[in-house]
Amino acid sequence: MELKILEERPNPLLQRIEYRFEVSHAASATPKRDEVRGELAKLIKLPKDRLVIERMRAKFGTATTVGWAAGYQSADALKRIVADHIQVRNGLKEKAAKGPAAPAAEAPAAPPTPKKEG
Image (tube, helix red, strand yellow):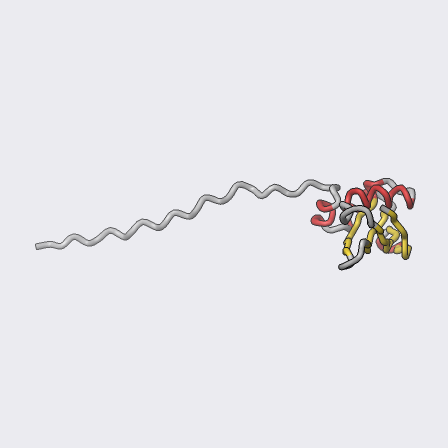
């Protein structure tokens, strides 16, 4: 797997540096997000817990994948800015467990039938 940074753009408002990268993987399948995060973190000398891969798209018919990532100045900035589902994808947060299912509403009791006199 060969990783190449195509573009690096600082974004001081969001306290991050945004990256566009390309991964060549001729000898293997499309690499996993975690593998790419590890390699990219080494390349840009940033702790892995402050790096988020937003997207990765494999180019059809080729052995290359293009991706977008962001390296944050602090873990706190990352937690405030990045959407929860992106944090889950990157392994930075546990998926929220769904609560116990609400019990099915019972059918209302049939109204009492009037008694016939007579």
